[in-house]
Length: 85
Image (cartoon, rainbow, N blue to C red):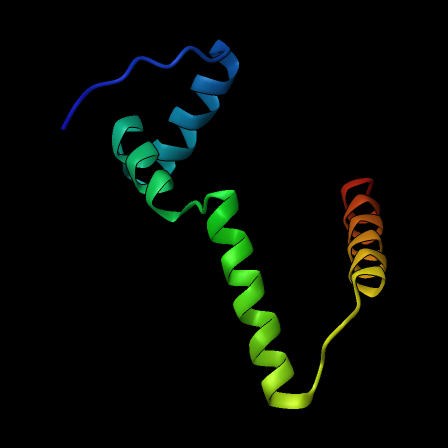
């Protein structure tokens, strides 16, 4: 295992350390676990494509690019609404 130095704002480091401590982990262990759970953009795109293929096979759902964009816009709107609360 190699070590890496990452420069982030002190506040971000402190917050990550607090979250790690609350879960009974060191910052190093928490970041390693976090890295294992995050998806790359390519992995997210692959999963999205798999989900669409499954939906199409299951019930014929095959949105157009315009419909997908409208759904993305609606999700963004709803997330922003919740964030503002």
